[in-house]
Image 1 (cartoon, rainbow, N blue to C red):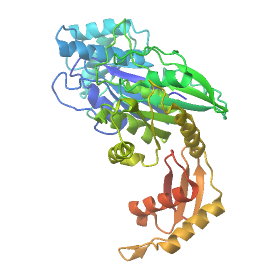
Image 2: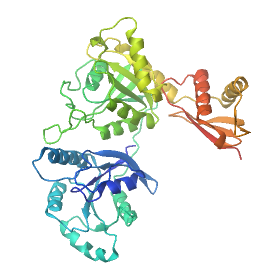
Image 3: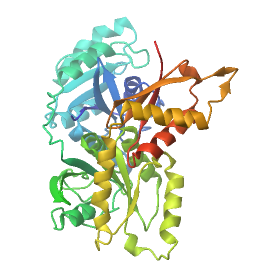
Image 4: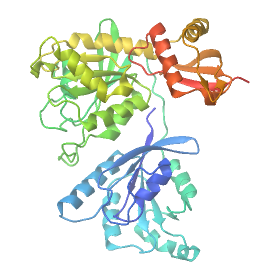
Length: 436
């Protein structure tokens, strides 16, 4: 089920980033009293009254031909296009400015629900001026204070009320849904085409040329798949994504719907910081993952090249030690046949259940060979273990005192469980609980 998306927009220096940080519960966006500090879209997950949604912080919309301001406006327009609801923020200490009216003109064209938030209304006397904001034509304005968290509950109640009804799409349990993620120009569309064995997606060397997200069915090796392609962005015929700007929100949407995520790495250019960021989203979502090294045909190699490249990648993606690595060329289709079996294995492990009695036998044997060390004179006692969930496989370990469960011991149990049951391609979760 896709999460709804809220975009926070407005001219620079009205407090968008302060509200964003309050919503997500941490200081992600830079907060500074200087216009234009937040230049790009920032994405995070927020929750209000048990409703989870994605929220986008944007650079301020300012009508100008200065290159930086033009880019900020384009980024904000992309966020508006991606959103379900828009929070239009204004500065209550300054009233409606000409710049606010220009932003309003852009929002009129969006055909999205608009909720006005008038920020910096800390003084109760200032709230008497709230009625002037009705003139913008977007309905009831909400006086808030991002700095002190005032009025945000009423604002969010209204925002959530505009969310579209979420329908859980019926899915065939035997079909594996997977997405292809990665920074621009690593070969996402080429890989999809190679798997489909036909030119069903436009392929181009221009970064960001994929126009629309395409779900495509594939039957291979007696298995049904659905490929969820993560598309780039287009706005009025022009691609506004800069070379290093990956459409992260589209990737998040695809990841949410996937059983398995393929994280593409360019063998020619190697690993960049953006590769880590994009793969990190999939890892945090608990999806099964495969690291796919594309363009392997372009690399000068010998019998050690593959092993050395894998060692380099593993050092950069230590948190993905469970993810298998597949080397291939989408262009020549060399080694492309190794991908779908890896996807199938990862999906099966992602949904694997372990019998409780066998799980406890494995843990007891591991503890017999490696006794639990004492911490400050106390020793952790493992009493019982059981699997409580799949996708990803999750285990609860009942112990005498959860505070004695050190990270290194948790890692030890994860390794023993992997050795006994496999789980290649999927993360596993372990939770310590005190037995009642």
